Image (tube, rainbow, N blue to C red):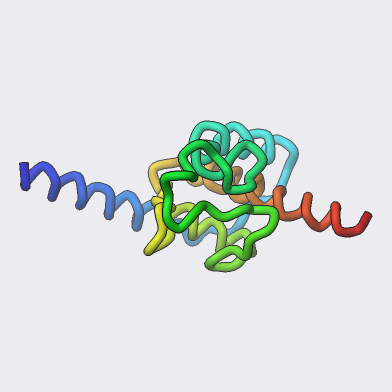
Length: 127
């Protein structure tokens, strides 16, 4: 059993580190945003909620609570490359796990979708 846990832990660590890319952010496109929404629905809604407010059904059991992408400060910054790193590596000391197992294209799509919640906030402030 200990060997199995060690193998799983090593695989998780490798995936987390290997999942980080040094590639430059791709151009944001409507197709990329649509893909990001699909990836978000499958991987993120349980904690962050469908509107990105941090109010998904699993949020009640998490400490610290998931951030609201529209209202809360991003822990590692809100530039696309910084959000990509957070998604790829997870956030130490939080329930946010690494999503390095997702393809690089899916993680970039997710970055732009997550950041779209932030731009919705800015648009609301201008009114």
